[in-house]
Amino acid sequence: MTKMQLIEQLSKKMEVNHAEAEGIVDAFFQAIVDALKKEDKVELRGFGSFRVKKRAARMARNPRTGAAVPVPEKVIPYFKASKELKQLIEGS
Image (tube, rainbow, N blue to C red; front, side, top):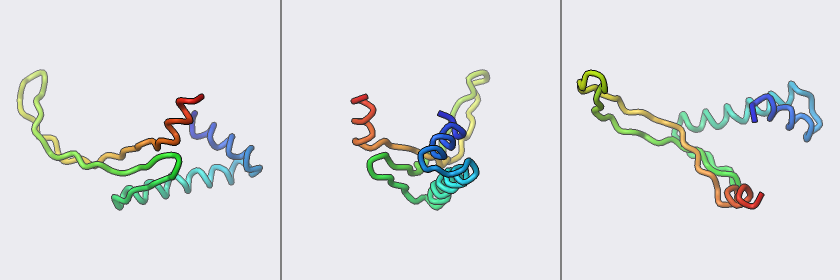
């Protein structure tokens, strides 16, 4: 499902126009992004949780030359599905 398909479904189910549904979806995603930027955990009970994980800086190797290449620390978003969501998907 694409973002536009999600907006269309939301528009129909909530009986709002396309622009309002798009605003809701955009605001929802932006709220998650804002929380993750502050390294807060976003927990949606019955669905799952979003959080960030830090990957430590490390040394890697260039496969072509074999030279050591420093890889800086990274902060990556991570999603973990809830037990309820897993059961709903499994049961379908």
